[in-house]
Amino acid sequence: ILVGAGTARTDKPRLTVRLPAGSPAAVRQPLRVLLDSRGTVVEGALLDTSLAPTLVFTSRSAPAATREIWKAAGLEVLE
Image 1 (cartoon, rainbow, N blue to C red):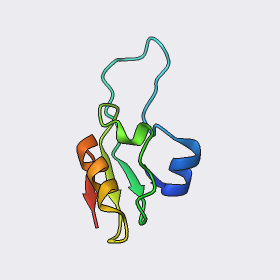
Image 2: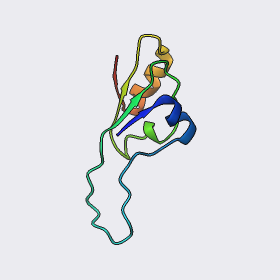
Image 3: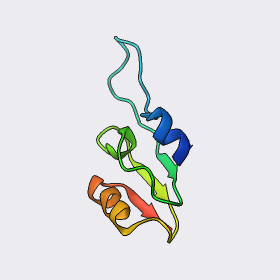
Image 4: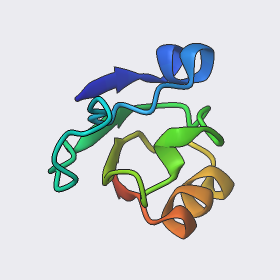
């Protein structure tokens, strides 16, 4: 599931599968993909990799501190 930085900051989406009560517990979560060229998403559910894996596509203009936040949270970061 792909989301841009603006939507991620504004809506703070989880981008996970949530089934009704009584549904089978085993659910394969989708890969969440964040497009954030400037490194502006530093909080929210996308940084919680216990919910689902997250891949970030960014650019060299993203601050090193933000990249470290992403990596410490377990996100895969690609430039």
